[in-house]
Image 1 (cartoon, rainbow, N blue to C red):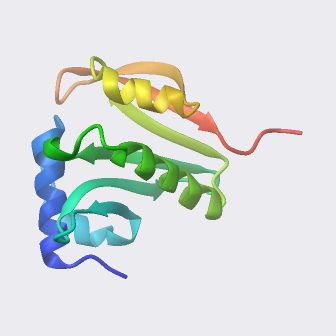
Image 2 (image 1 turned 90 degrees about the vertical axis):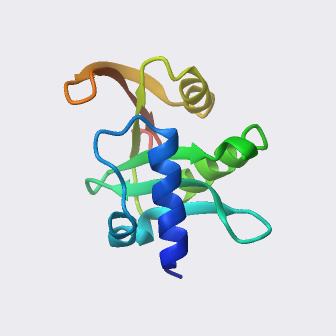
Length: 143
């Protein structure tokens, strides 16, 4: 089931508020990739957490902007979304998961490392001035 305009607006707002992005998200940007989003909802149906799961190569899936609204932090939403993201990636044939985490975002780094991701390198995002860590997890080991 696709996202509604309201849900896409909520995702865009959440991503823009909680992340140091160089490009702002819009309703249309979210809707253009609506099939990639996994969300958690409040009892009222509002988006309270989201993640984008994007296939970038036949073997590689990227996990982007795992984000939880402040009032809903520390309630297991990020862990649940990361579990679901990995399940979806595996179901779609992923052999390797990758994400990037801004250096200094210790909560995200800790979460991804708890899920078996390894830091493989760091680069400078020249647009934001942030150093960004690259993390990977092999989900289909060699024989």
